[in-house]
Image (cartoon, rainbow, N blue to C red):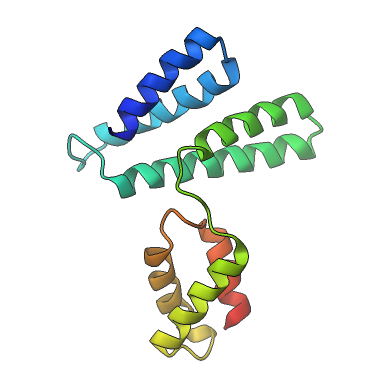
Length: 148
């Protein structure tokens, strides 16, 4: 079952359950998937990697919006963004904790032979490829900077 089919089923279930928060999050995912499928250069079906990237982008948007609402003391809007973020994150693969990310990046650094910050680009490219969907780019970047 593709992500799009699962989302459609979950939208129906959320409508029946009258769960507005979940429904908002699912509709955002469905819209993003439809948009990604109609972009120039894409095929009929999205690959699993493309689906993960779409979901990560939505989560990142919700986090950034939530931070803005929190700084502006808009707790009501912050809670909506946070609720949608949790719904979207439930469709992502399990995220690794910081210690696991550090261990993987240490292995990458030793295999590449990186010694200084000058090698950060090589390490980031390998880390982003290996940790795709398991950690966000910000965390990966912070860990690479701290280890180099």
